[in-house]
Length: 101
Image 1 (tube, rainbow, N blue to C red):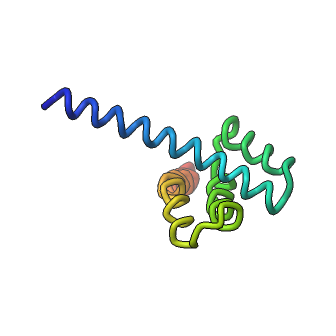
Image 2: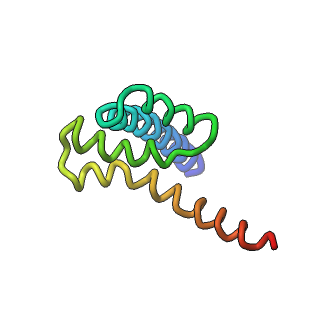
């Protein structure tokens, strides 16, 4: 049973890594579609080096919606994990900035 749970955890990690790579790629496509390739590369740079992933997450929604031509609910379900990971970090950063007084 322990080996099964370990392999299930490893499969989950691989799945989320692949989902993250797909979100960055589709986010690049979405930003490139609306703003051009320079801003898409800036968003990828911000995601990797500055840890600002919100533009790629929003770009992944618009990339799935307009570039890949998915329905809006599938595009939202594709981008939602990124938003769910960003929201707690943003709230924590805001609270910690107020507590530094």
